Image (cartoon, rainbow, N blue to C red; front, side, top):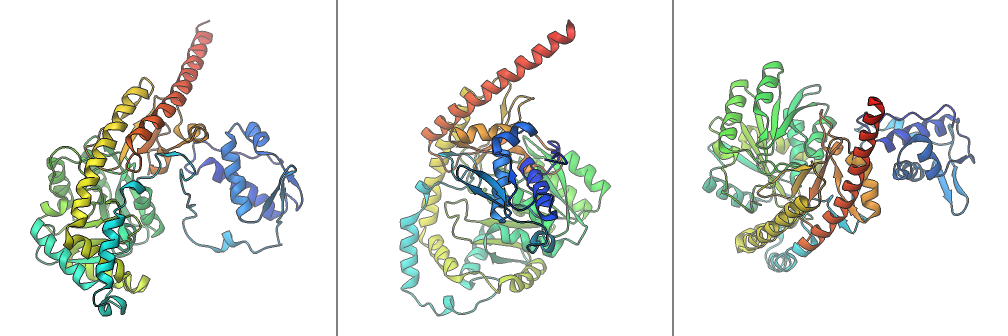
Length: 486
C-alpha cells in the first residue's frame, strides 16, 4: 500500500483501531478505489509486524461500515469510495470508543467480571416477580418520580440509616445501574475542561464516563492498599479537582482494598482540599475472607462522600438497578439530570428488587454467592501460583471478582491475547484500564463467572502460552547480550 501504513505500538489507541482509521481514510479519499483488492490478513500482518488478529479486527470494522466486502475464495475488496456515501464518523460527536464483547467467543472467559449463569438467582427472581404481579400494579405502571420507585427508596433510606450510610441531610436516588449513576454524577459535578482524580488502572466505564463529559481524568497509581495517598496529596496540591473517585473495596481491576487508616486519610485529604469523594461500592458485599470494613460513607463526618451501589455483582447483572446516596442538594440535581435523560427508571424491576430485599431471598443468595466466590478466588490464586511463569506477580484480594496479573517484563499481554483466544481462553489486557500509566505486561483475570475446574484449566493454558513466550524472550535477550560481549 502506498503510502505505507504506520502503526505506533506505544500509542494509547489500539493497533487495530490505528489500522482501521488509516485504511478508512484511504477508502473515503479515493486513494483505494472501489473494487480494489486489499491484502489478505496474513500478508498484511506480516508486512506490518503485527499478529493476524489485529488486521482481522480492523477489516471487521471496515466491513461493518460497508467499506470493504469479503468474498469466499477471492479475498476482500473495497466496496465504498470517497464521495459515494455520507461520512458519518465526521458528523458524529463522542468518544469514538468501540463497544466490544471481549471474550464472548472464548470457551474459558476470564474477560467478564459478571457472575456466571450458574449463579443467577432465577428461581428467587421468578418467585418475587410473581408476588409483585399479583399485587396492586397501579403505582408501578404509571409514570413515576425521577428519584425512583417510592417504596424501594424508603427501604434503601431505612437500611442506610441503620448501617450509617444515610446521615442527616442525605437522600437516595435510584438509577439504571452504576453506570448511569456515574454518568449523572459527571454531569452534576464536573465542568467542561475540569479534572477528576481516578485510580490508575481503573474500570474503563468509570474513566470514560468523565472523558465523555469533557472532563480530564487525572490518574493516581493503585498499590496493594488501594490508591496511592501520597500521590493523591501531591495532585491535590498541584491542581483544583472537582472530585476524587475511588473503589475502596476490591478495586477493579486490581482487587485492592483500602485499610481503615487509609480511608480516614483519604477523607482528611479531601476535606482539606474541599473536594467531593465518589465512592464506588459495587463490590462491597462480596467479601470472601477477612473482616468487613466501614465504607467511606460511614466514616464521613463532613458530607463529602457520594456513594454509588448496585446489585449487578450480586448475580443480577440484567436487573439494571443502582442507587446513589449523598447530600440532598446533590441528589436533587441528579434527579434533574435523570428526568432529562429518561424521566425515571423502570419501576417493575425496582419493585421486584424490593421484594427480593424484603423477603430475605437476596441476602440468602448473597451468602451462597460468597461461598462460591471464595472457592473461585482460591482456585485462581492457586492456579496463578502453579502455572504463571517465574517472575510473574499477581494481587491476592479477599473478595470481589478480579485478580491483576503482571507478567515478567518483556511480555506484552495484548499481543499474547490472540494466542490465548486461539486456544479458547480470553482475558482483558492491562492497556484497557490505563489512565496515564500503561502496563503492557499486565492483564485482568475475572473469576466470578467460572467454576474452579474451568479456572484451573484456563490457567494451565495461559501458563503454557506465557511460559513459552517468556522462554523465547529470555533466549533472545541472552543471545543479544552474548553478541554484545563478543
